[in-house]
Amino acid sequence: MKAALIGYGKMGRAIEKFLIDRGHEITCRIDAGETEKFDSEEFRNSDVAIEFTCPAAAVANYMEAFGRGVPVVSGTTGWTSRIDEVKTALAETDATLFWTSNFSIGVNLFMRVNSYLAKIMNGFPQYNPSMREIHHIHKLDHPSGTAITLADGIIANNGRIENWFEPETENEERPGALPIAHERCGEVPGTHIVSWTSPVDTISIEHRAFSREGFALGAVIAAEWVAANPNRKGLLGMDELLPPM
Image (cartoon, rainbow, N blue to C red; front, side, top):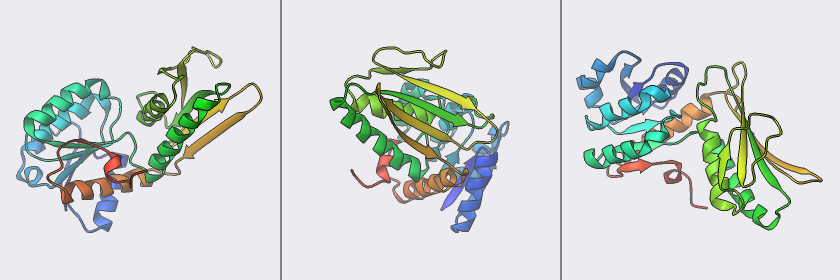
C-alpha cells in the first residue's frame, strides 16, 4: 500500500511507525503550510491518505485529496458542523472519506456496549445518564468527537434522551438531555466514562487508553481496508471493519 500522511505530529509519527512495520510505503508527508505537496506526483500516486490534523484544517485537506482522486482516512474531530459540505464534495468528485471519531478497536467495542446499555435503560427510568471525557492539554475541541459519538449512541437507543449539553456547573441538569463534562489534563491519551445514576446507585462503564498506539494501528488497518476496496465510495466508518452485531 502506498500511503500519504497529512499531518506529521505525534499521531502522524505513530501511524508512520505502524505503516513501516506492516511493510507499506510512505509516499509523502504533508504538514501545516505544505499544501503545495498535494500537487506532487507522490501524493497523486498514493493509494490512500491518512489525515490527522486539527479542526480548522481538516475539511480543506479533504477537498485537496478529493480533487486529486486520493481516498482519505481521517481521525480529526471538531469539523462535523460542515459534514453536509463534505458529503456534497464526496458525491461531486466520486471520492472516499473513511472517518471515525476514534480508530481504537477497544473504543468501538465500548461504543457498542454503550448503545446496548442505553437500550436496556429504556425499562429503568430511575436511571439518568451522564458522561465525562478526559484528554491531554493539547486537544482543542470539546466535547471530544468520541464523546459526541457515544452521546449519539445513547440518543439513538434511549427514548428519554433527546440531546446533549456541556454543563456549566457540576450538578447542572436538563430534562431529556445528556450532560457531557470535559477535562484537559497533562498527556492523557483519552478516557471516557458513561454513568447511569439512580437515587440509590450508579452503573458506570469506562474506556481508558494507555497510549496513542491503539488509535494509530486502527487508522492503518482502516487505510488497508480502503486501499483494498477502491470501489467503496462516499462517507464510510468503522462499521465497515467490525463484524455486525
